[in-house]
Length: 70
Image (cartoon, rainbow, N blue to C red; front, side, top):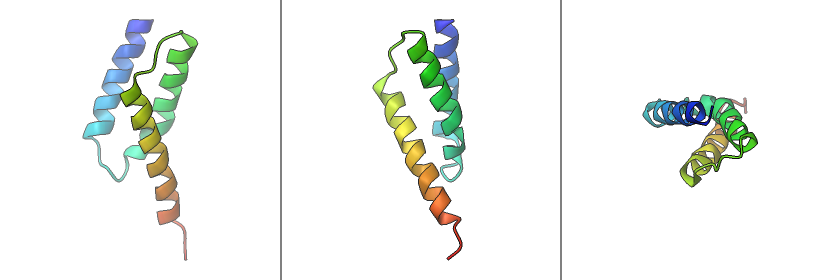
């Protein structure tokens, strides 16, 4: 199970880092779920993953403002 989570995390991280910077915030819910699953399993969440998640949250917030009518 832990190996599965690590594999999922590595794959998702690659997708995010290689994805379109304008739309990669769409991965945030998946990443949040993986982080939660890891914590429930008692696994340590790597700091680079925490930072990446924070970046995606910020990008998602910015994208909401970009799409607001003025």
